[in-house]
Length: 233
Length: 233
DNA sequence: TGAATATTTCTTGTCGACAAAATAAATACA
DNA sequence: TGTATTTATTTTGTCGACAAGAAATATTCA
Image 1: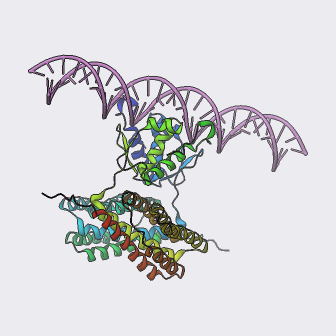
Image 2: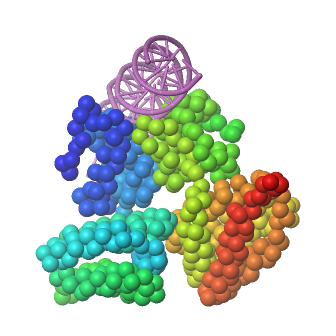
Image 3: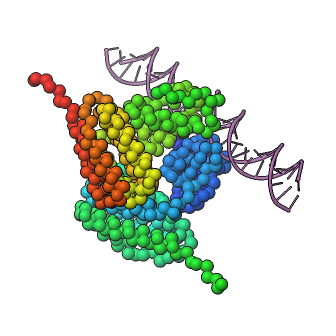
């Protein structure tokens, strides 16, 4: 909430939309702009030191990615998480974990694995540091790197969107609870990476599915773990 | 190329962006704006009788859907079809045919089937009329209706994008060749619809996969069916 | 005559202003 | 005091203008 781009004369022409998009996107994903937050163009214009036009264009872009909801002549707001349809989300997420990991086993290149391993190291550091928020984002970054190694832009784009959504969901919960972060996930990632590297498609897909189902299971536990009001009647 | 929205005083405020988006989107999908066509904001502004601002917002939206390519300070153009990566496209297409059809078998409602049947009737009419262009669009509409009956917005969105891309690809070819349209596809659609209606997930998925593979196979034939220059050397 | 440079023109990105639509606040009435 | 109406304010959609960047054209030079 502090990376304003500065006045016009310090920005390269043509970069306005992207700067605003990048910053707002990150703020939405980090829940600095939580679901349901109103988005006010005039305030953003003041904040970023630019006219409303590039702000609006960035908002169109964010809307296209489902991160904000807009209707004509109405206030824009940060999109809500559709908890009523989590099963759709989980179906799509698990399938994308499987498909992208299998494709990575088939199509990865050496430079891909360098990136994947770097992301895994970051993830392991976050788990070691018991830093839940870092874990959430480094997990997404790792799996996105695997997806990119699979080289199917359609799946990568969908998976990216799902991972982003997952980041928002998880952040809602890890902000409120102090869970021990399971070291097991680091080991699972290592196994997946090894299977990918070995180009073992079937094993990659199987490990990815198990891993994804673990994650879904954990999210589901989070979703139902709302303590019941304990009042004697 | 004729549905301009008229001057400002005949349009409802707030509808500008959508009107331009809808018209340009259709023109891209119908190849009236073929791949690689330049997009000129000033001309569009004159054509639609509105300022460039809503035009640009519509273009941001189209870019987000991969229908146009934009870079800062450069001319926008209609996105090319990436023929070098058709295998990625086919992988995604087949998987989406399977997934959405299976989900339709699981989650469809009576009103969904009414729509699906109406789209199939339109498809059958197009085949009967040997109207290739109508067949291309009604086929996409039918499968999108099936996907919507499956009720997973993530898959539906990806499939919609893939079907749109397929429309552009097929139009490139059917504009140039006069093929007999196979009646077989009508029958296959009927079988798929019956399996969906019967809630037979496994059969639905199998039929969808076979159907998709037929379509892929046909597209592949189109792609390689460029006559070789027949000159004696 | 082809290449390099300068100039002109065109297109894109952004600006601030205007006004329609929505929202909030104030006023009137029962 | 609660409801309906009116007024004021805020926000959004669009406008046309300005200027930076890119492309096209003209000019110069070897």
